[in-house]
Length: 318
Image (cartoon, rainbow, N blue to C red; front, top):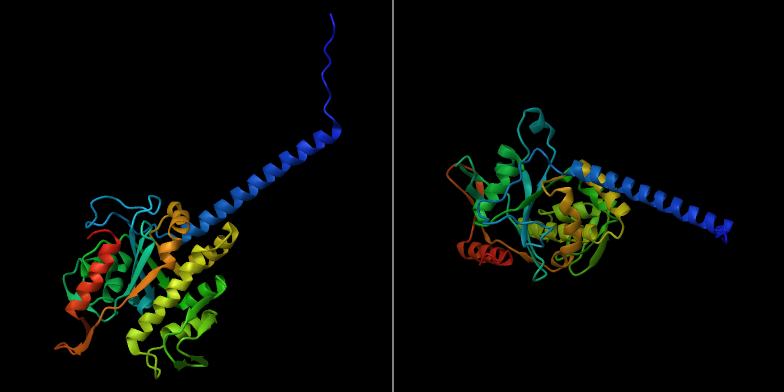
């Protein structure tokens, strides 16, 4: 019987296969390492002490993974040492509500003045809306905003404004066009001019309200919206997972959210267009001093109804 001889693999081919296998293993190891590093940073940002649940104003659950129309409230807080030492919570000096609709590729953003007079959820007292965060953290603040606007709030993002400059520097700065002409500290801003801002410049731009030409609280709210929109666009457009990881590492020290890690990638993938096409809404009203001696912002009824309806429509609730 004729013997069948096996062909021997050429030594060069053996080496090539070995190199490919080693490369695949190393690459897989790198991917796994980056993934767990990324997940670790994201979990630090994720607030596991907050019992995220479907809003009572929702009939069904919504998720970034399902490309639903979703609302997010952003709270900007200052890390006040005196309030921390006394056991008091941090008030939210900045309150913004964003609705994102991936079906229409439209976004809406609304700033709620911190002195807005409304009922505080779970307490039943009528006070300034920014007190809710001090009383019960983001959960009570979310429900208060939800009741005020009569629409579901699905998620929150809470930012320590003391780390605002660090966040902006970590993403490489922001590009913003000024709507006003004013000076804040060492920075001069001119209406219609576009600026590449680092953290310090963006902070000066977004916090000024008393400078001549800055437009008071309404001007500051508009500038904060511009900066937040630019930050969101920069983060959502990060091209590599390693870049996203480095930014998350900075965010972990200054940001808390109830958006879980499993939905962050869907947010980046599916909501870039709504984040780019954001319409900025303004709640009109008056500042008045009431019988308790405090100044409040009292919304104009027509303006309130208009912005409320626009936000609800973007969530496809109307």
